[in-house]
Image (cartoon, rainbow, N blue to C red; front, side, top):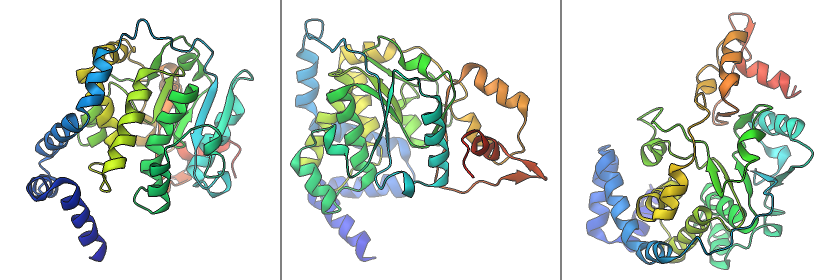
Length: 316
């Protein structure tokens, strides 16, 4: 109760009582479209200067790095030993299949500062628990891509041997793109329309998508203590897509891919079937899973898809 009252006081402090009343009403009556439109309008106004600056820039004259972006970033704040078992499975397998000309970097609380220059006010809010690690990681991933280039892969993503085909390219920015909503009940998909996936992004050093999101999120948390929405990162990309022609073009030009991105998760509890496995892997190299629940190792006396991943990753 005390925590809820504290959050409510922060909400009123940051946004005012009228916004707070609408926000709470739409959110808790599950009027999702009205809730999202309220958030969009606020952030569109708050980020107006950033949107206008990017609209006016001549990106054709700007020098985006031509260096190969061969770093692959995975993050678990407390380090590998503290990873949930599902993340250990995904990371260990990725480590086994990564080509020798790519570098897999596990970002932790002990090494992130070696790769990304995060503003002091963000670090202070993380240390004061105003920002949680999940929110911080949204800023961090865009900082890493903007400052260094490379590929961000969430720790709960299973990759197969062909994943490198998608990121070993000359694109300024790439992300897994279905081109249609897979599940309309998932708020993140309603925001992105599955035109990008913020859990899987590749970009060159200095790319404008990561730059915009990084700068917007740093500005937001400089002036706010309450996180207006869990999907603030996704909403920032959406605003860039809708209002900045150059970024709109970049995202539009990303080809649809990985049609079974979410399908492996749906069968993780089921008995393993080779035919289904081959079907999924034929045209999909990334599979979004979750570490937030346990998975059974057998179903009707047979190994499950989860058990199969565990075996492939050599995790006991």
